[in-house]
Image 1 (cartoon, one colour):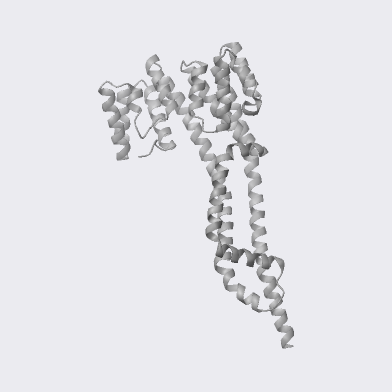
Image 2 (cartoon, rainbow, N blue to C red):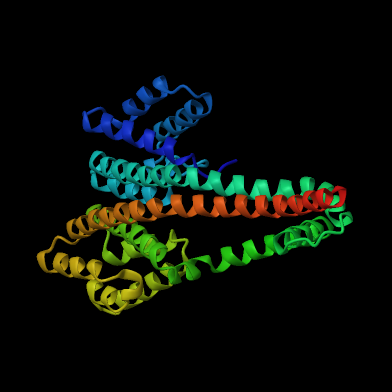
Length: 343
């Protein structure tokens, strides 16, 4: 069984639920309405089961804490706090906004990567087809001609023979490289200038929004940091959050400990956190700085993806040109030698 419903389904559920609650409809009646309008049998039965649990006396937190999750763990903690403080409608609206923003960023990134990914897949498919199926048939003809083959043709012949004879070892080697890259990817990517900025802004935007939501829901700074730490999957940021948590527990101001680690938390976040602490509106300051990070993300994405397209087209053009040159040059040499012999 899957661990959570897809993000799109969770966003759709939270948006509808928050709308019904903001309209003054009680929680159970809102769920009944969603069940009636639900088209998929799986989710309809899932929501019916949640209603039964709530009617049997279980809290909202325990009722929704069942797999597959239609709310992630941080959202469930917000719901638990909202249920205890009576701010369910308000917090559901905040969750809906954050989840929708996350889905929007995800869709924008996927949409921007589809075209470059298609070009890369096409280029590698072309190379594999040539090396596995086309060149093995042409190699005997080229080698038997006796003509001196150009370097590009010899490189392709060697690659074709090597790939055909050792494709299993190559496949395993590539797999090991991919595994190693995944293990160290989070640290390697911070040495790539543009992508490091993109990842940093994205992480800080999510962190600022989550902290703002937890603080607005009544949690302390340490509790909010603990939630962010538990659900952080990047070891680089996880280590940074652990240090922040330890320092705050010792009595250091939140903004001060952020300021001591600019590599992870930058310069804007500590400044806005400091302003929020001075004014007593830390959650609002964090929400404001997250909006600034979102703008930075959009600006970088425009530059990156505007650059990726011509680079990939140049890459594909070089591959096609190299292959064409490797095939045409020896064939032209063979044809010329045959013409010379007949004359």
